[in-house]
Structures are given as structure tokens and as C-alpha cells.
Image 1: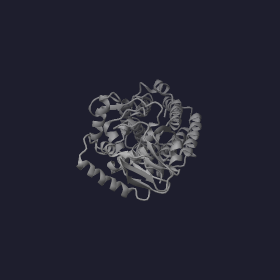
Image 2: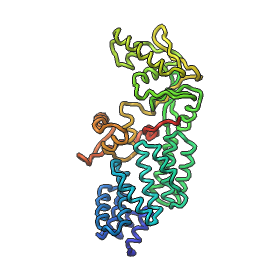
Image 3: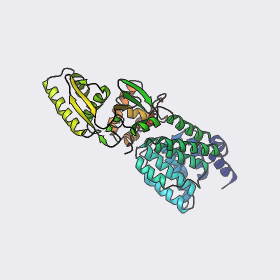
Image 4: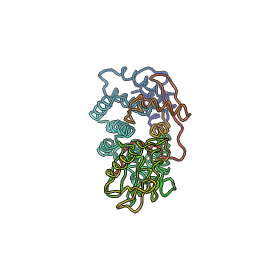
Length: 405
């Protein structure tokens, strides 16, 4: 490798893409193409970066497996930044195996971290946690250690383990400082701000207030009966009942919990659960049936009693009843949660992350675009969607992930 290639590689490692381009911008050999691709990625031109890396992989030839593996890892990282979550995982796994065979432990670990970050984005937290636990960050360079700690903090936040998340972010900040890469330091600072932003709202006795992550964690460990509108479950300190696939029952449970210790009129319950503007006897009969189903579902957690005007809920073991709601509630809050991370998403990537059909996601995007909450650029397969960040809210905590327990 000649001196210009070496100098360009060192500039990229230090987070100086312009310095790297100054050395290899006019060269068309395989190493220069690869370095130009990485530099363009750092400058934000992801489409051009991917083309350059693919050209470099072809130029290296079949005997230069190690160099081609590096290109595959770099392209996978660009795909992650471009939110191309459907990018095939097998080439990345093969590249990681090649890097390990050639003794490039740091690059192999980097490939593993890319895989873990993708798993986190699509809500596969258990799998991401297992893979991260198998990775020892001690021998890694500072930049990779910072990325490792960021992934650890992301898992801890989704698990509602605020102390672990705070400790991981402190270690990430120190590693990023040692790496002296401004973009990495900014990413750590952004994650720290996220941890200090409201993650949910508490609704109780007719009032509501925002909750930080550690406050949500404390609430779920308290003696309260919590109707969790983030994940559609009802829980106390001893047990959990999921109503995620029974939306009518959850709507009734939330309405009753918001009114506790009072009752809710039958007309109000009919309007919220069935959207019945003019209720007749058939609606009232259906309400009685659904209340009976809810009473059976919450057996052991709460009683539901009929009152003169409607129905009331009463906890059996808990001291009180509260509702835990999303910071921002609307029909397509989950889609907005992904789009407000500052990156551009395709509808196919959103569908993969949300576990929904692409047509369902497209309808949600069209609705949000009509109200001015998101915007798109590009056409056909190149079309991407973005939204401005919601100020003061930890939007990524709205991403799908199971609660502890």
C-alpha cells in the first residue's frame, strides 16, 4: 500500500474525510475507490458511497478476499445509515468470518456491531442483547468501544434500565473523547439528551405529567396498577395481562383507569370503544359483553363493577390505578417515532422495523404527509421519508420492545 493510501486511511480513521479525498480523489485503483467511498459516506453522500464501494469490491478481484470483506462491511454500515434495513445479512456474516480468519479482530467486531445496531432498529432486542454479550470490547479501539457502549445503552433504555444506560453512556463519552471523532462525540451527546428527555406521560386522578425513563422504571416497580398504553398491557408488581390483540378491551380498561376512583358513563364507553355516536340497545348489549370479557381478563388484578351511570374499576392488590401513555399520541405515533431519529427512511424499511405491511406503512406516511408532519424526497425505490424531531421527547423509546417481566 503506497503512502497516499496510508495517509488517506489514517485521515478517515481520525474523522477527516476531506483530508482523505485530497489524497485519493483522482485515483481509480481499488484501494482508492474504497477509501473514496468511505469518505463520501462520512460526508453524507450515501448513494455515491455505495457505488464507489461496490466498484472497489469488483476491482479487488477474487484473490483479495480480505479487501473485499472490508468493502462489504463498509457498504453494510452505509446501508444502516441509509436505513436500508432489508440489506441481506448473509454477505455481512461472511465478511465478518473472513475478517476473523485473517486476524482483523477490530474490523470483525465492527461488523458485529453493525449487525447489532440493525437488530435494535427493527426491535429484535433479545437477539441484539445476546450478540452484544458475546462481544468483548476490551481489546477494541476507542471508536469501536464507544459504539459498543452506545448499543449497550440502547438496549438498557429499551429494557427500562436507566442506571445501566447512564453508566454505558458515560463510558461511551470517554471512549469517544479518546477517539477524537466529532461525529461520534455528537452521537453520544444525542443519546445522553435522549435519556434526559420525557419517555412517557403519567395520567392519574384527572391530571397528567411527563415521566423520565427512571421514573417509568420506578413506577413499574411500585405498588400501583398500571394500564400501559405504550404496549397495551395491564400490570401490577406481581403479574401482567396483555391486551395487545384485544384493542376494544384495552380501550375500555384505559377509560376506566383514567376515571378512577370515579366511574365512566355508558355513553362515554360506547363512544370510545365502538365510536358509537347514537347508541342503541345492540350497542349497550355489546358493551355488557365486552365488560364481562374485560372482567375475566383482569381477574386477580382488578374488579369491574356496574354503577348507576356506567362502570367503575377497583384494584384488588394495588394501592391505586394509573395510566402510562406515550409522550405524543396519535394514530401513527410509531411511524413518527422512527422518522424523528434524523435519518431518512424508505417505506420498506419502516415496514420491516414495524412488522407491518408496506402498504399499511405507505397509507400512514401519506396521512402524515397530508398533515405536514413528514416529508419525502426522491422517486420510486429511491423515495425516502423524514420528519423533524419532536422537541423535548425521547421518541426512540416509543420503538417496539417488550417491557421487563
